[in-house]
Image (cartoon, rainbow, N blue to C red; front, side, top):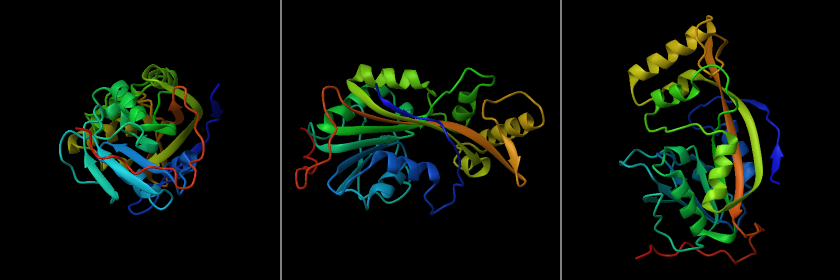
Amino acid sequence: MPQRNGARAAVVADSAGTLSSDLSRLVDFTEPTAEDVCLDVTFRGGRMAEAMGSRARSVTVVDAAPQPTRRVGLPPVAVRANAGALPFRDGSFTLVTVRFALYRLPDPRLAVREMLRVCRPDGRLIIADLIRRSLGPGDRERLERLRDPGHRAIPSLSELTELLVEAGADVRRLELFTIERPAEPWLAGAGDAKAAVQIRQALAAEVEGGPPTGARPRVIGGELWFRQSLAHVAAVPSGGVASPVAAGSARRPGPPRR
């Protein structure tokens, strides 16, 4: 049975140039070592690689977004690639991470299979994503799709773990928690200003007793805040055993497959 940590609320202030508490928590959960050869699969991002950079031997970033975009952060090594056909040899990495990107990919199951392929048998795969905690009132996914049309779904924890198992992973550890964050920095990342207005209006209306959104908004210090439920999942290739990387045993990523 995977180890599961209980949910705890966290307050997140997303300020430019600072490491938000959910990202710091994910890095701690990931436990990168100085011998880790890491792959971070992103979708228009790079903050995870930036956060792990000083704690791992090397970090390669794959941006799986379909169109060229401005990167967030300065990843040490960056590659544009299809997450369903990663351009690396089998077993190239001791640690593979994917943060808020899996359910933006066209085929999450295929992407996980590829991540497991390029992960060493004794390596580990770390996934961080939004989850659907209950069947309460409000269409929580609607807000995410309005903000980012590329967002495909918010899975339940069982859906996420089932996907991993079907793709060939053994789940070893789970962490569930809720963050409360200010709405405006999050809305600043919306691809459409009109969509941001719609989301803001829906959140404000719920505070005033209107229809539920599933985001449980409230006003703190004159600002609109809302909640998100997150899961961190640590898995290993099926049949593999995650273990500390022996000094000098980690390989650099091999050249792209031909």
